[in-house]
Length: 114
Image (cartoon, rainbow, N blue to C red; front, side):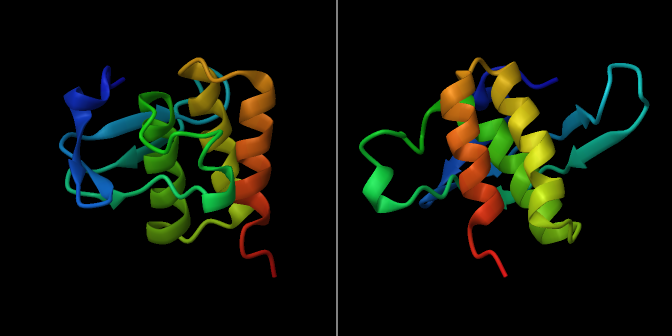
């Protein structure tokens, strides 16, 4: 699993670019199901302006979750709810509090809801 953000991604304009693959195991440990984000994938941490004072979009704890979410949503065509699952688990693994994680998961799930 990638370590510090500088080990696997770099700033790229307003967003980020993966420099090495991210392998994220889906479900229970040992499931054998993985979500892979390849090197060279551009992603961002989209946070509405009105909550920008609460959430720092460049907080390293959010980056892996954002990369997994954006890849699942935009490259693999997963729905918002499905893409929110690895997003939530990555936030938890990187030490984001339960309340903050809930707010972020709700935001990515209902954003552009149709």
